[in-house]
Amino acid sequence: MNNIENTYIKYDELVAAVGEKVIESRIQQISGEMLDFLEINGLNEIAYLHQMSLTHAIMDYFSDIQRLKDYHQIEHVNEIKIKSYETFWLLKRKPIQLKVQIEDDKYLYVNEKFLLTRLTSFMLGDDINKPIVGEKKVIFKNFLDTLYYYLKFRKCDAQSMELMLLAFKAGQMIAP
Image 1 (tube, rainbow, N blue to C red):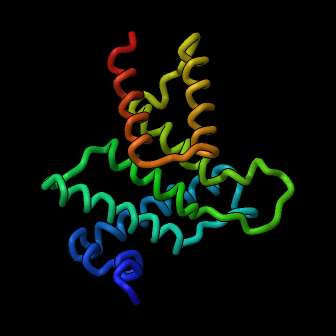
Image 2 (image 1 turned 135 degrees about the horizontal axis):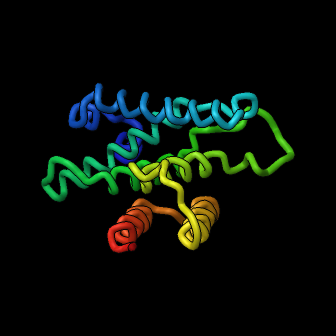
Image 3 (image 1 turned 180 degrees about the vertical axis):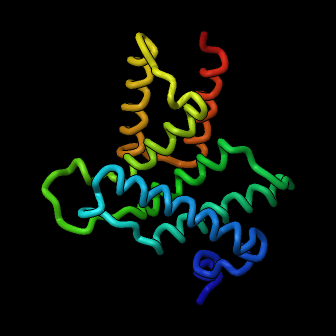
């Protein structure tokens, strides 16, 4: 096997650098979120969590984060960068998969819908239970519709996702 294949298949150095417990914890956390999403949305009959795809997404995420830490010689990265890289790799690996052939294409974008709900929860944080009313409701709905479209049809990378999350947080800070 050549070096490139070893880099992307063998994660021994990454596990040593990050820690097996940290990696396993993140896999369990996101696995739980995905399984809850499937349950809450009544999707267990038509979709399932492909564990190997999720594991590779998490390993790819940690690989990117570790490279950033090594390059910038930092110990931690901020939560926006974490969410951005997680979103990118979960979108790329698509660990929620359909069990059966279905005619209704509303289930085709189940990973994107999961990520939209996850990002919405992250962006709203403590304000998630506050009602959004009036013009803000229309603006936020348009934003979410656009984000969902972006996740489905646009080339999404971690850096653009990071910029979008930073812009959203900045807007929250200056909004009346």
